[in-house]
Amino acid sequence: MDEYGNLDKYTKNLIGICETNDYIAPELFDVYGVKRGLRDKDGTGVLSGLTNISRIDAFKTEGDKKIPCEGSLWYRGYNVIELIRGFEGKRYGFEEIAYLLLIGQLPNAKQLTEFRQMISDCRQLPTNFNRDVIMKAPSKDLMNSLTRSVLTLASYDETLNDCSLDRVLEQCVKLISVFPMLSVYSYHAYNHYLCDESLYIHRPQEQLSTAENILLMLRPDKSYTPLEAQVLDIALVLHMEHGGGNNSTFTTRVVTSSGSDTYSVIAAALSSLKGPKHGGANLKVVEMMADIREKVSDWSDEEQVKEYLEKIVDKQAFDHKGLIYGMGHAVYSLLDPRAQVFRGFVEKLAVEKNREKDFRLYSLVEKLAPIVIGEKRKIYKGVSANVDFYSGFVYSMLDIPMELYTPIFAIARIVGWSAHRLEELVNMDKIIRPAYKSIMQIREYPETTDL
Figure 1 (cartoon, rainbow, N blue to C red):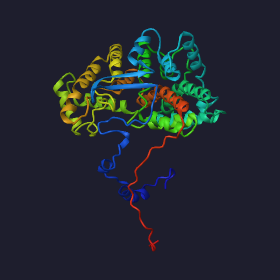
Figure 2: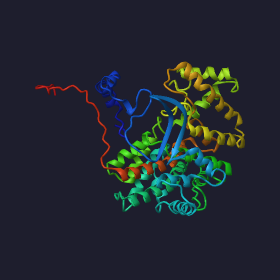
Figure 3: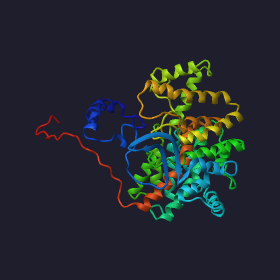
Figure 4: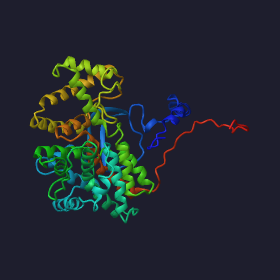
């Protein structure tokens, strides 16, 4: 073994045996009626709980038939598009919608002022935490850095294992408040120690919103435009919560049901979110679009773009996985409402940043991809752009480094995780324990061996 415990020369001799013994024939899932991944073949999720926090509508019922429809997303009974229209151009919405998801109702002016002050008061880390924890072991994988920081913060909480609602709400608000600091400071540590760039640490300002503080802490000159902060604020609101059935939120509820502490629950959710099949989707969109820009000579030529998309679907181009990233969704069919509402703000930002040509290419891919996928694949429902199709483009226009894309998602989604942790605690009576059908063969231990 080397100094890091590399076991390659041992494991390579064992992995073939392991794969043979662990393999389960796909057809057996049909034989035993098991819904793999808790999903039907058409992508519908198997019901595993009830929630009053959010809802996704992607189908309407006519008689006994489910008909795909334009999607809608609801937070605590309010359509998310209406919520954004309510604060757009008047105030930043992150704190207001966080209050809605956590408490269950929209705040009045006094409650919102108090909640904003609470968030501001909690924007501080323990003494020397930045130096002793964040700067100590920098990593390009900022999600691992973020998870480590969350688990370390548990050491500073004398009420760590107190699962009373008031204590858990306090812990959640504190984590929501410091997630931007943990994420941005982790990036600066990586950028300085591993990339040999200048190090600067800006403190968040009390009077600023979460979105404004993210940009202030990230940028060397602390500057940003009102539109930049507004678009980031809306991106955070759109990523806060999504129906409860996603992987990281389910992880939140599973770990909560075991009686574990808040920090362990959020660390588990972070570990789920960092997976490329969950929180890393917008990274793949950015990489794919860069590949298209490089390989297609005329971005405005529909035929050229369509031909290259066909190559991507046929596994002849880009990463050879056959996927047009940012297209389609596990739940939505005809329309992801988050992408619909986001698109208009993305266009405004593209104009401000002189990125109209890029925006037109994104729009063209959004138009052509469903056609190409429909021609090449058997699909059970409609295909449309999802919110991740545009979020990576937005982050690139905001000069947010790619290493921070998934942590930005986490800064938003911890609000939804916290709301689901609280709801699980209010209603919890049993540990979540799914069943697995065992198909192993019983074997007799040999009387004699060659050991």
